Amino acid sequence: MRVKVVMPKWGTGMNEGTIVKWLKAVGDRVEAGEMLVEIETAKSTQEMEAPATGRITEILLAVGEEAEVRTPIAIIETD
Image (cartoon, rainbow, N blue to C red; front, top):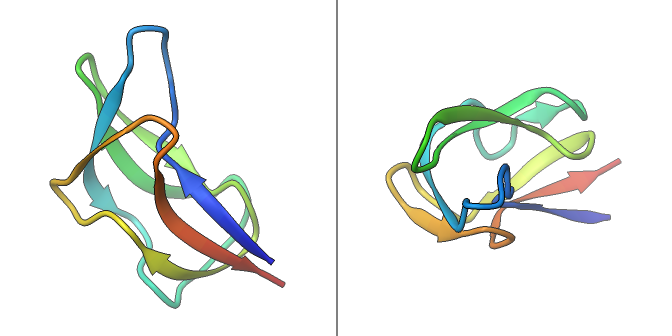
């Protein structure tokens, strides 16, 4: 099953985020809860956890790209 990883909404004032660093690459295996990506918001930089266990099949936003909350940023294919 394909799981979309979406830009989180960490606060009421957060409308978008910028990818600072991917901690995993396409083809890497991730466990649910494992740190996946660093995202910068207007107020801070935070790490986001993988929402599912599986393999990263696509990264949809490169480092430095900005997206609105709830925009897909990666795809994880579950087992």
